[in-house]
Length: 423
Image: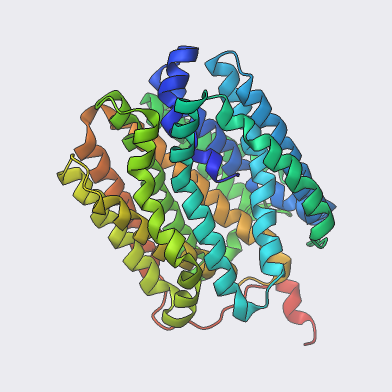
């Protein structure tokens, strides 16, 4: 439900524009308001789970997400919709890191590759199915129903979470409010500069990013533990997921709009044209994690990024949109995403699991926001420049995979004082 709503609005944006009189920039922010609040608050959501209990906060996040979905459906204007989407993203920021931390706590290390493969495949498939669902609902009912559909799912999930999952807590830590504010300034400023082309916003975003890094290096309870990036697998997996998700999300946003605005396709037709992306995640996701266990994350991430770049390059050269190209996109994310997930979480000690998964999800969503903003900035140029730019981002993901060592040790990250404890 959370991943679906990242791009469920993609094929409904034309209907939203007509009903609410939204501009192109406002349409971009209906996507970016969700992804930015999601990204900026993810580590805070993980910290809340560590302090108050992951099961309890997981259920609370579902409640907030469900209520915000109703507010989206009832929004009378584009501004109200953007605000409700930001609140929806805050609920998602509580749900996602706690979901991944709970998943990893439920499986021993030797089975996590398989489990994260299923998890990565489902989330990847949801990102693809989102535009199809959005197009079908917007065309068959009304765009508001893409949000009303979340209510029965959320209301059914809350009691299941409370009765069917075990309670877990991490090491309680203070909420890093200065880090939260600085991360929000950096993410908002950089994204706004891409959407609006304003150098002042870019300067503010860069200043916020530098201040955030400096603060996190000295904070007693950092929102983003920078020492985790001393691990090459952790750093490489996060770099890879940022660029891979930027390429995928930006391409889906642009293509869904191009087919409707430039070629007169219906919302459902635009969504169906993206559906082949989901074939590979559906068929191969459970095996992808096992492949990472067998062949190593390095080769799978690099291969997945290059396959995704090749598919997007094909789209840039062939605007008629061959069916094989989106299928190749799906194969690329099926190879890269589970392997990147495994590289990040499989070497993290349990006390650090929530922060590690929160960091991974943060960079994944920031990548998505960056991809949408970049696609919007190049939108006027047509398919070739946008798809070429997304292909370059996918190659960045492949380069992230190549940062991994060829033969890796099982490197487990622990708290500094944990090394002093007896085995």
